[in-house]
Each structure stands twice: as C-alpha cells, then as structure tokens.
Length: 124
Image (cartoon, rainbow, N blue to C red):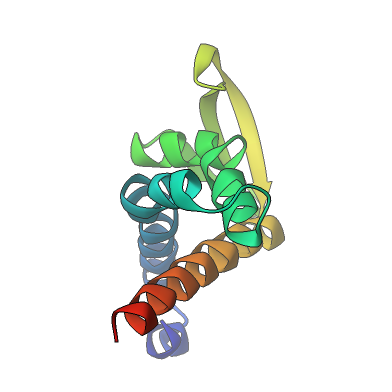
C-alpha cells in the first residue's frame, strides 16, 4: 500500500480503498471475526473489538460495500452507503467520515494480526 500511495493518482487511490475495505470488512468479518466473537472471553478486548466490527455501523458498511451500495461523498471526505439497520427494514443512508473509516480499518487489521499471531505462538 505504501508503494502504491507514492503514485498519487486517483485510480490507484480508489483501488487501495476498495482493497482495504474488502480485506478489513468483508473477508476478515466473514472468515475470522465471527469466530473470535464466539471463542473470546466475554468482555476482553478481543471480544469487544470483534463485536464492534460485526455490528452496526460497521456491519451496515460491510453489507453495503459488498453489494456495491456505496460511493464517495462529493467532497471525498466520507463514504456514503445504504443498508438496513440491524439487517432489517428498508435501506437507509449512512455515512462514514474518512478518519472513522481509518479507525475501523486499523482496528480490523490489528485484531486480525494479534489473534493470528497468538495462534501462531500457541502452535509453536
């Protein structure tokens, strides 16, 4: 991602956004965070982080992103997306500001790295 950032072109930036969002919210949520949520001790940082990343508003963003129901806000400072609240009812508009999205992405990567490293250390 760092090398691609040096290109500083809109197409590369958009590709980075799509890649990061897919890995952080679609791939990891479906294959990792639901399992962590089930096996982690209640109330621990792992459990709370996994819960945060699998519930609204992150859940709504994940669903909107994976179904193509999102776009950049006109000023490019946020993403707009459309999803159902708690998976029910009509789709409504949501927004996530860039700084909040960066936090969600960082938390997702951190939780994945830390839990995978813990498993690798336990297996060694």
